Image (cartoon, rainbow, N blue to C red; front, side, top):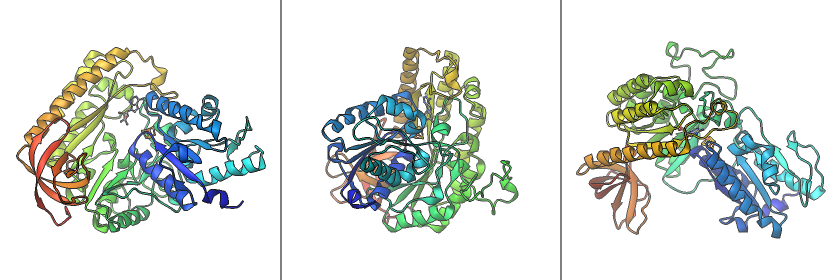
Length: 492
Ligand code: 5AD
Ligand code: SF4
């Protein structure tokens, strides 16, 4: 097949969901640019429209269905347009997407993203030949209209992380994401991710080090390592290595901590062998967040004093029903040990309200836990049943207005806690990395190592610089400060 049609093509890509999806979208754009595609800023200007979707709550899926429904209208004028749903919702909904959105041409799950150039080429080829036969090992649905050759690629157990295609696309900036593992081996009762993203698989450490060094060389100042559960990095590598042995049993790390590569050790490697000034990571599961991790955080100069550690609930009864693998007490003890080893650590969390069976008493236990920990930030979600999860088999028995009210109560408490935390910083001098321009001219937005956002004013261009700021005012959401001094552009 000639490459000509690709050379003229342009792609519009919109992203829903988490930071992993944002990073996936950068990789997808990079692959397609390497194939000769151009980026279209508006869907109306594109030959290929892709939505990279999320399934974590029903609301996220409804938004993507709605958006693609709207975009489908563009096909009336331009039947040659290619419409694709990729990512988590593709894996979860599969054929249901073609049924609900008959104009969609492509459905590709998270483990199949690296095949996108081939899948798009396959659609094109079939349209040219006007046939709808099986091809390339993917299931191809028959033709339904004009012009059509639908392609669905789903069901791979995990993404081949050692086979990243050439091409990468990052918007220029100060901060970058780096994926270190894919998938999730946990079985939290409410969560769709193990189903949509498949089994855990870790990216070889050399690839990660190379990518971070390239980013540092290109002027990025901060890298956030990404994975559904970064703390279990190293369990399984694409070559069959890893600390999960061939029989599926965990090999004891403490016995031979230097030969087996786990997440704390990866942090140490990156700290030693790259020049990136600031390192963050997300997301951590409390079960796998150990003292070994906290010690690595304390000892690596580049690792920021900040941790997102989703607790989900403060009630042991609900934690057990959620199958989280820890009690509220065990979680609190981890936080105590973390605060002892990493003083000044900034903490954030995720909480689900209205999980099946959650009583007012259970909810009060969550309120008490939040009161005790006093997070810097908390994301609160109303429980949403997801098809095929264990929790979906239970009655969604907390009425919507009760979920809403619990959500509001937690948000109000968190707002008060954040405000208190920020007020306490008034008058303090903090070090910030300036990540982006502020909303108004002459304003700059940076973050402290503990992840507090600070707005400072300066007529000079501060982008990418590490500066000292004197905090003048703290609201619930932001700190305002005055520029105090520069730090030679590095926080190490
Ligand atoms: N309903 C509501 N919130 C959910 N989350 C995950 N699954 C669900 C669900 N079914 C929340 C969790 C997780 C965050 C990314 O989304 O709090 O940490
Ligand atoms: Fe959404 Fe979870 Fe998939 Fe991220 S991994 S896109 S949060 S369902």
